[in-house]
Length: 273
Image (cartoon, rainbow, N blue to C red; front, top):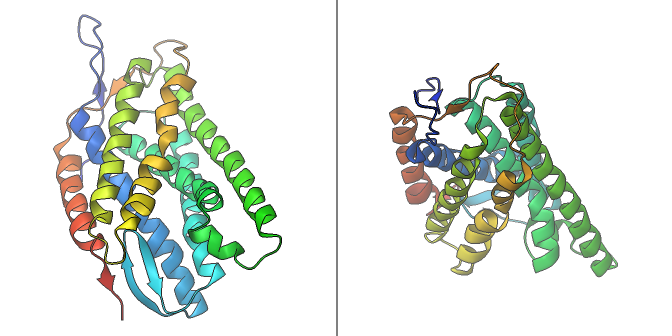
């Protein structure tokens, strides 16, 4: 996978040229697939190994186990949060805007939204990973309310942090403010379609298409759509030339492979025992 430098998003006549939609969508597909893998395999899967919980089947919508475990249920979102924090810290250190730096920012942002958003979703729906964590704790309504409130606070912090990192790049001039919608809206739509397509093949229940497919993508990553409005169109000068993402066939080809495996293999599920 190539990570060649981005090209200037200003033509010789100063006209703005937006980032390549194909490259943006390709990076989005890889980031969303990686986010789900972190949640299911790295999070839930690692917890199963640590607590010796038998794993039956893993797919894009969940990890099926032989028994219920609070620790295993919590581990998916916790893994997302750790991956998100580490990635956004790295993204903040990137000096130039490139396909790689955009991927790091996007991967971190999606992980944090999913990791914190699951608290809100479980509290609202009365189901999901964190509902398993608080099952049997009294009083139940207080636990759900507290969990939901914590989720809202952490989710809002995650969106503001990710937006502030992008705002700094606009302020420094490495990203053009006019490119922000191209870097967020197609990403949000592509990631949502990927999750829904994979969940449509899930081996468990059609209901998971809505809950774990659309819910975990369109529902929990809507913060992407807020970024353009949160970032002011202010820059300090031309110390870092503004860049747009050029058409990068390395990322596009890799994304096609990743999406095919994610939908066709991970979506259908992989038997583990």
